[in-house]
Length: 87
Image: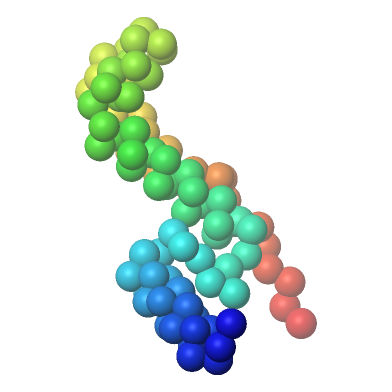
């Protein structure tokens, strides 16, 4: 692998990280990563009607109620953030 290939790969990765929040970066902690994953999942469930209908049937709720519940879960998908240790 040549130096130019490594530079190209790194620049592509930086471009993806700038464009899409969920791809993460070096300073991303475990909690923030989990929140991104959960929010992406809920957004996918809301955006794909067959999946939303499946959840509605499985939980015996209306599709609108399931959409509302997923939107509410997107606010704090993993609970409150842990307290940070200040050095």
